[in-house]
Length: 271
Image (cartoon, rainbow, N blue to C red):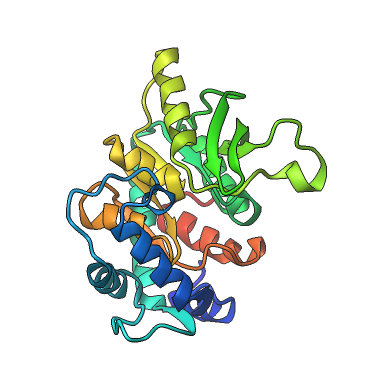
């Protein structure tokens, strides 16, 4: 089993934690937009509490370890690796619990280019112990507002992990799917479950709108989030998201493999 010390060293070396690629400027911009309830950063969450920019800085300092000084406005953001490790342990515990119950799970990502391998390994392990890894609404069209206007995507599954692709996407550019923050894919997937009469997921695993969209609908959700994704941490603070792991969500895909091993071992899901 990968030791905690070795994983901490990897988090820092891969810049998954410590000084990360996400800039303080990017994070502060997201906090301002979230305080204004901009749907591009609320990710399907309808906050119950009033959150201003200072509140969000304080929350993200507690959850991630970023600077709580509002006059600190430039430079790389910083994630405390101890907070990442603690959240990974809680993440693994929730996976282990649903695995022990052989519960139904829905897994989806808005970061397929980076995180598909991480989630696919979880899907494989959960399926191997008898969990139903749901794949509802395969091929359904989802209209998502982007900076280029409304674009139509197809909901698809790769190794049990939901993602969206542009219609007709082929080759390397379309192999893994599109980057999205939207909650609409998880809503489409859950609607597909309901229409099919099957069991709703006991747990949704993912990032961005997959976590916030599920949590807003009252379904337990856990996931990964960067310092410029305050919605997931607000959802956790308000009790609608169970666990959020703070880390850089856009490093090389192979850098997440040690996290996969650590989580699966902690959840007693290693094969």
